[in-house]
Amino acid sequence: MLELRHVTVRYGAVRAVQDLSLTVPERSIVSIIGSNGAGKSTTLRAISGLVRPSGGEIWFDGQRIDRLDPKAIVARGIAHVPEGRRVFPDLTVEENLRIGAYLRQDKSAVNRDFEQICGEFPRLAERRRQLARTLSGGEQQMLAIGRAVMSSPRLILMDEPSMGLSPIMVSAMTQVIQRINETGRTVLLVEQNANVALSICDSAVVLERGSVVLTGSGAELRNNEHVRIAYIGV
Ligand code: ATP
Image 1 (cartoon, rainbow, N blue to C red):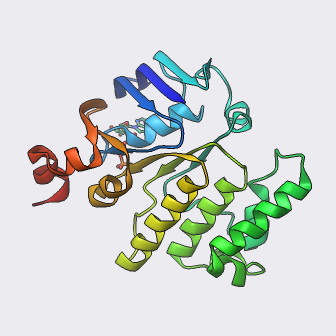
Image 2 (image 1 turned 30 degrees about the vertical axis):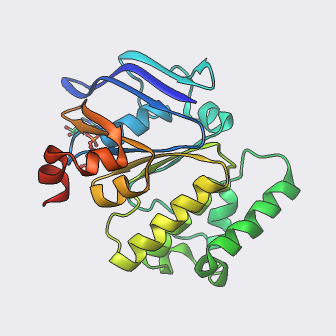
């Protein structure tokens, strides 16, 4: 469904992503793990059109997308949940969710998805008239994910959804990601928390200094000695 072929992204002299190739099959969960500065966020930003690769190609559904602008990429069905709970603090929970659907024309489908998200995230439903700034960190992270789902994407890019969450919220978040996937959506997940990322994915890559150094199923990578020492800490 999504394919990156030899993608390189530079910020001036810094090569943040180097010759990265990655395949994300339809309906799968694929994880990218790596430490700070490995190039994980940059990879997602390249897919969603926020930065332009200096080399390589990105294909989605058989079409090349690495020359499109971010709005055109959203319209093709790719949603990006950026790092750090980027919600609109002075809008209500409901307004934040509905903004996710701003490109959609079919208002009754939008209302249906809104009700479904309220069912999926009861905490957001209870707080739908509250300003987003008054939500806890974990609730804001859920809101950011709910907003992405409101664009009715087929592929969701998630940047460190577990960051800063308590263990209970991390496990709630893991379940939300799995349910989103079960509704037929494909997920590309970036995580520093290798335990989370490898427990829910179909396959994963390890990124170091902008390049893929290991690939495998979640179970294979969890048993890999380098991954255990460097990313799981056992
Ligand atoms: P983290 O988990 O810390 O966010 P990451 O794996 O997501 O790390 P990136 O944010 O993709 O890593 O950064 C990769 C490299 O690119 C880093 O060396 C970073 O300093 C550099 N970089 C990222 N954004 C910019 C920018 N706007 N300008 C210059 N360099 C950048």
